[in-house]
Image (cartoon, rainbow, N blue to C red; front, side, top):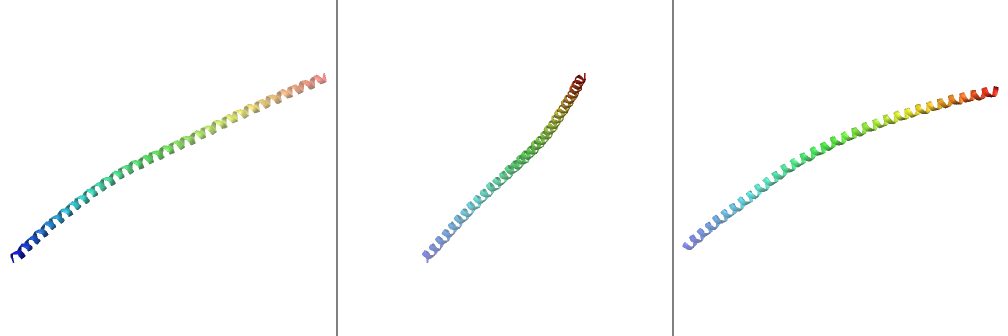
Length: 118
């Protein structure tokens, strides 16, 4: 009977020890889960911050590109205006030269006709 009681007590102590070990393992697992969650949350926040920075950089670059496109458009407009002005000035010079030539030809023709009459 005593052996039975002793075996029963030994079984109880073993159950208690196993229960404590299981609780220790569960606590360790919960700690690991908590640490993993914290790391995950930290990484998530870090990535959010990096994402915001990248989005701002992208917006800045888009703004810069739009500014450059507008400057290019303005420069093209200025160049077209200058080309138009040069073309108009050259055309006026050409017209003036034509007129001078025609006047000179008329004068020469008149002079030749006058000399032929005389």
